[in-house]
Length: 239
Image (cartoon, rainbow, N blue to C red; front, side, top):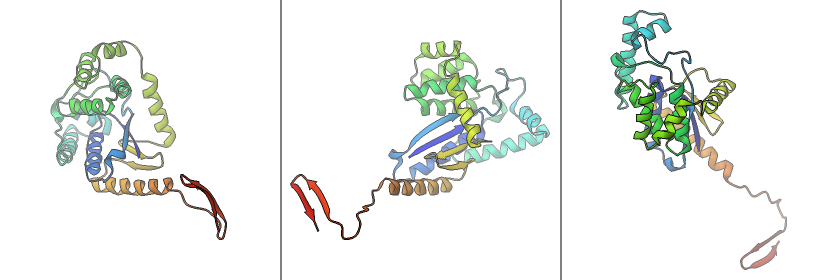
């Protein structure tokens, strides 16, 4: 089973949705048959690398609300994150541009470290208040999950993997993704948002059941037809 997940590293519900899916997979009978692929999505491509306002102020401007209302909203999200074992530190969070972080994650995929890099970037941003647009930070986080520091440094000095990021974003437009997280199962079923674990379990089981049916062969021999076949013991014709 293939699951594609469009998400951004500064999206609070993306981290929550990721964890809820993982919890669902813990209760799924065939987790080893599931292949997860993260897709790039930028919630705010025009964000500055260096934040000039805290996350409460940023949200207040984006949503057209007061800073106090933004704080209350963030506190609510933080409580939701805590229910799945995540710690969000909004007061020290550094909202920033995520394009280079997505490029590093794409590179990580090529050496089978994509999921580790995604998790590390999310934790760095939401829990550790790291500036995930800073090249030195990205290099350090990348080496922590086993990436080659020189390769990451070279990537950040060039435009490598930019096309892969843009390709994901273009595909998101084509299939109608207007917000993240957005989960696509076997390129056929979509789940939008950080749904409860129970929803993910239901979808996993439904897609698995359909997948097994689609790969099972149905014998279409007409009634009363002769059956000619061969086995290791020889060939024969049955009436």
